Length: 238
Image (cartoon, rainbow, N blue to C red):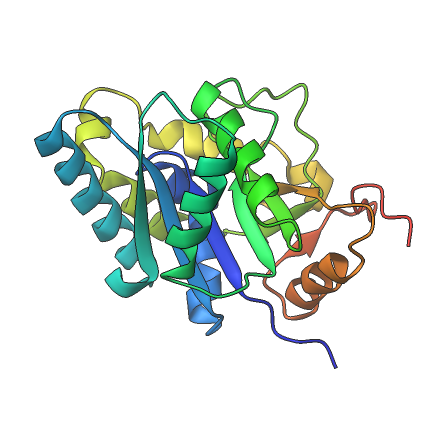
Protein backbone atom coordinates (compact mmCIF):
# COMPACT_ATOMS: atom_id res chain seq x y z
CA UNK A 1 0.00 0.00 0.00
CA UNK A 2 1.31 3.44 -0.90
CA UNK A 3 2.16 5.77 1.96
CA UNK A 4 0.31 9.07 2.07
CA UNK A 5 2.89 11.63 0.94
CA UNK A 6 4.11 14.55 3.03
CA UNK A 7 4.09 17.89 1.19
CA UNK A 8 6.57 20.72 1.55
CA UNK A 9 5.84 24.04 -0.17
CA UNK A 10 8.82 26.33 -0.76
CA UNK A 11 8.37 29.87 -2.05
CA UNK A 12 11.07 32.41 -2.70
CA UNK A 13 9.05 35.46 -1.59
CA UNK A 14 6.13 35.87 0.84
CA UNK A 15 3.46 35.99 -1.91
CA UNK A 16 4.77 33.31 -4.27
CA UNK A 17 3.01 30.29 -2.82
CA UNK A 18 -0.47 31.79 -2.90
CA UNK A 19 0.12 32.97 -6.47
CA UNK A 20 1.55 29.73 -7.82
CA UNK A 21 0.24 26.94 -5.62
CA UNK A 22 -2.70 28.29 -3.63
CA UNK A 23 -5.08 25.71 -5.06
CA UNK A 24 -2.84 22.81 -4.13
CA UNK A 25 -2.20 24.24 -0.66
CA UNK A 26 -5.94 24.46 -0.06
CA UNK A 27 -6.50 20.92 -1.36
CA UNK A 28 -3.64 19.50 0.73
CA UNK A 29 -4.90 20.96 3.99
CA UNK A 30 -8.49 20.00 3.16
CA UNK A 31 -7.28 16.44 2.50
CA UNK A 32 -5.55 16.24 5.88
CA UNK A 33 -2.12 15.77 4.38
CA UNK A 34 0.99 16.52 6.40
CA UNK A 35 2.04 19.93 5.07
CA UNK A 36 4.92 22.27 5.75
CA UNK A 37 5.48 25.71 4.26
CA UNK A 38 8.82 27.51 3.93
CA UNK A 39 9.29 31.07 2.67
CA UNK A 40 12.91 31.70 1.79
CA UNK A 41 13.60 35.44 1.66
CA UNK A 42 12.99 38.70 3.49
CA UNK A 43 13.57 42.22 2.25
CA UNK A 44 16.25 44.30 4.01
CA UNK A 45 13.88 46.75 5.68
CA UNK A 46 12.86 45.11 8.97
CA UNK A 47 9.44 46.75 9.24
CA UNK A 48 8.60 45.85 5.65
CA UNK A 49 9.88 42.30 6.14
CA UNK A 50 7.66 41.83 9.18
CA UNK A 51 4.69 43.28 7.34
CA UNK A 52 5.20 40.89 4.43
CA UNK A 53 5.53 37.93 6.79
CA UNK A 54 2.22 38.87 8.40
CA UNK A 55 0.62 39.12 4.96
CA UNK A 56 1.94 35.67 4.08
CA UNK A 57 0.63 34.08 7.25
CA UNK A 58 -2.80 35.64 6.67
CA UNK A 59 -2.91 34.55 3.03
CA UNK A 60 -1.81 31.00 3.75
CA UNK A 61 -4.18 30.61 6.71
CA UNK A 62 -7.01 31.71 4.41
CA UNK A 63 -6.18 28.58 2.39
CA UNK A 64 -6.35 26.34 5.46
CA UNK A 65 -2.82 26.52 6.84
CA UNK A 66 -1.99 27.28 10.44
CA UNK A 67 0.87 29.48 11.68
CA UNK A 68 2.68 26.46 13.15
CA UNK A 69 3.03 24.95 9.66
CA UNK A 70 4.78 28.06 8.26
CA UNK A 71 8.49 28.83 8.62
CA UNK A 72 10.73 31.62 7.33
CA UNK A 73 14.33 30.92 6.32
CA UNK A 74 15.35 34.61 6.36
CA UNK A 75 17.59 34.57 3.31
CA UNK A 76 18.24 38.03 1.91
CA UNK A 77 15.88 38.97 -0.92
CA UNK A 78 17.79 39.06 -4.20
CA UNK A 79 20.78 37.10 -2.92
CA UNK A 80 19.73 33.47 -2.90
CA UNK A 81 22.58 31.06 -3.64
CA UNK A 82 22.69 27.28 -3.97
CA UNK A 83 25.59 26.29 -1.75
CA UNK A 84 26.35 24.17 1.33
CA UNK A 85 25.31 26.84 3.81
CA UNK A 86 22.01 27.44 2.02
CA UNK A 87 21.25 23.71 1.83
CA UNK A 88 21.86 23.32 5.55
CA UNK A 89 19.66 26.31 6.37
CA UNK A 90 16.70 25.30 4.19
CA UNK A 91 16.82 21.76 5.59
CA UNK A 92 16.87 23.07 9.14
CA UNK A 93 14.01 25.47 8.44
CA UNK A 94 11.92 22.79 6.75
CA UNK A 95 12.56 20.35 9.59
CA UNK A 96 10.86 22.80 11.96
CA UNK A 97 7.55 22.29 10.14
CA UNK A 98 7.75 18.83 8.53
CA UNK A 99 9.95 15.71 8.54
CA UNK A 100 11.11 13.93 5.39
CA UNK A 101 8.80 15.45 2.76
CA UNK A 102 8.09 13.13 -0.15
CA UNK A 103 6.75 15.82 -2.49
CA UNK A 104 8.28 19.30 -2.64
CA UNK A 105 6.40 22.08 -4.44
CA UNK A 106 8.48 25.04 -5.53
CA UNK A 107 9.16 27.31 -8.50
CA UNK A 108 9.38 25.97 -12.04
CA UNK A 109 12.73 26.30 -13.79
CA UNK A 110 10.81 28.02 -16.61
CA UNK A 111 11.01 31.34 -14.79
CA UNK A 112 12.79 34.62 -15.49
CA UNK A 113 13.18 35.80 -11.87
CA UNK A 114 16.64 35.08 -10.45
CA UNK A 115 15.41 34.30 -6.94
CA UNK A 116 12.81 31.90 -8.36
CA UNK A 117 15.43 30.09 -10.45
CA UNK A 118 17.78 29.76 -7.51
CA UNK A 119 14.96 28.66 -5.21
CA UNK A 120 14.23 25.77 -7.58
CA UNK A 121 17.91 24.80 -7.74
CA UNK A 122 18.34 25.05 -3.98
CA UNK A 123 15.21 23.04 -3.22
CA UNK A 124 16.16 20.19 -5.53
CA UNK A 125 19.69 20.11 -4.11
CA UNK A 126 18.30 19.97 -0.57
CA UNK A 127 15.58 17.28 -0.85
CA UNK A 128 16.86 14.79 -3.39
CA UNK A 129 14.63 11.91 -2.26
CA UNK A 130 11.46 13.83 -3.06
CA UNK A 131 9.38 14.37 -6.16
CA UNK A 132 9.37 18.00 -7.25
CA UNK A 133 6.46 19.97 -8.65
CA UNK A 134 7.19 23.35 -10.22
CA UNK A 135 4.55 26.07 -10.08
CA UNK A 136 4.22 29.13 -12.29
CA UNK A 137 4.17 32.79 -11.26
CA UNK A 138 2.24 34.88 -13.83
CA UNK A 139 4.57 37.86 -14.13
CA UNK A 140 7.83 35.88 -14.47
CA UNK A 141 6.80 32.64 -16.22
CA UNK A 142 8.69 31.78 -19.41
CA UNK A 143 5.62 30.42 -21.16
CA UNK A 144 7.53 29.00 -24.16
CA UNK A 145 9.58 26.74 -21.85
CA UNK A 146 6.85 25.73 -19.43
CA UNK A 147 5.53 22.18 -19.99
CA UNK A 148 3.10 21.32 -17.18
CA UNK A 149 1.94 17.72 -16.87
CA UNK A 150 -0.12 17.96 -13.66
CA UNK A 151 -2.72 20.34 -12.34
CA UNK A 152 -5.18 21.10 -9.58
CA UNK A 153 -8.74 21.82 -10.70
CA UNK A 154 -9.41 25.28 -9.27
CA UNK A 155 -12.79 25.75 -10.92
CA UNK A 156 -14.38 25.91 -7.48
CA UNK A 157 -11.47 27.17 -5.36
CA UNK A 158 -10.30 29.95 -7.70
CA UNK A 159 -12.02 32.73 -5.74
CA UNK A 160 -10.49 31.54 -2.47
CA UNK A 161 -7.04 31.42 -4.05
CA UNK A 162 -7.38 34.94 -5.43
CA UNK A 163 -8.64 36.16 -2.05
CA UNK A 164 -5.50 34.71 -0.44
CA UNK A 165 -3.28 36.78 -2.74
CA UNK A 166 -5.18 39.93 -1.81
CA UNK A 167 -3.85 39.67 1.76
CA UNK A 168 -0.55 40.82 0.27
CA UNK A 169 -1.70 44.42 0.27
CA UNK A 170 1.83 45.78 -0.07
CA UNK A 171 2.20 43.95 -3.39
CA UNK A 172 -1.30 44.63 -4.66
CA UNK A 173 -0.73 48.33 -4.03
CA UNK A 174 2.32 48.47 -6.30
CA UNK A 175 0.75 46.32 -9.02
CA UNK A 176 2.75 43.13 -8.53
CA UNK A 177 -0.39 41.08 -7.93
CA UNK A 178 -3.12 41.22 -10.56
CA UNK A 179 -6.07 38.87 -10.24
CA UNK A 180 -6.69 39.10 -13.99
CA UNK A 181 -3.28 37.55 -14.67
CA UNK A 182 -4.00 34.75 -12.21
CA UNK A 183 -7.26 33.95 -14.01
CA UNK A 184 -5.53 34.09 -17.41
CA UNK A 185 -2.91 31.61 -16.27
CA UNK A 186 -5.58 29.27 -14.91
CA UNK A 187 -7.10 29.16 -18.39
CA UNK A 188 -3.90 29.01 -20.42
CA UNK A 189 -3.72 25.21 -20.31
CA UNK A 190 -7.41 24.30 -20.57
CA UNK A 191 -6.82 22.16 -23.65
CA UNK A 192 -3.90 20.32 -22.04
CA UNK A 193 -6.00 19.16 -19.08
CA UNK A 194 -9.58 19.52 -20.34
CA UNK A 195 -10.36 21.48 -17.18
CA UNK A 196 -11.86 24.96 -17.20
CA UNK A 197 -9.58 26.50 -14.57
CA UNK A 198 -6.37 24.71 -13.63
CA UNK A 199 -3.37 25.52 -11.48
CA UNK A 200 -0.51 23.76 -13.25
CA UNK A 201 2.79 22.11 -12.34
CA UNK A 202 5.73 20.60 -14.17
CA UNK A 203 7.73 17.72 -12.70
CA UNK A 204 11.33 16.93 -11.80
CA UNK A 205 12.52 13.51 -10.65
CA UNK A 206 15.97 12.11 -10.03
CA UNK A 207 16.82 9.20 -12.34
CA UNK A 208 17.13 6.52 -9.66
CA UNK A 209 14.23 7.66 -7.50
CA UNK A 210 11.27 5.57 -8.63
CA UNK A 211 9.54 6.07 -5.28
CA UNK A 212 9.02 9.74 -6.10
CA UNK A 213 6.63 8.73 -8.89
CA UNK A 214 4.59 6.71 -6.40
CA UNK A 215 4.03 9.86 -4.32
CA UNK A 216 2.66 11.66 -7.38
CA UNK A 217 0.52 8.64 -8.28
CA UNK A 218 -0.99 8.76 -4.78
CA UNK A 219 -1.98 12.42 -5.21
CA UNK A 220 -3.54 11.65 -8.58
CA UNK A 221 -5.49 8.63 -7.31
CA UNK A 222 -6.68 10.66 -4.31
CA UNK A 223 -8.09 13.30 -6.65
CA UNK A 224 -5.75 16.07 -5.51
CA UNK A 225 -3.90 16.26 -8.83
CA UNK A 226 -4.97 15.66 -12.43
CA UNK A 227 -2.71 14.53 -15.25
CA UNK A 228 -2.65 16.05 -18.70
CA UNK A 229 -5.02 14.36 -21.12
CA UNK A 230 -2.18 12.82 -23.15
CA UNK A 231 -0.73 11.21 -20.03
CA UNK A 232 2.65 12.98 -20.06
CA UNK A 233 4.57 12.15 -16.90
CA UNK A 234 7.76 14.10 -17.47
CA UNK A 235 9.72 11.40 -19.24
CA UNK A 236 8.96 8.53 -16.87
CA UNK A 237 10.98 5.51 -17.98
CA UNK A 238 10.29 3.03 -15.19
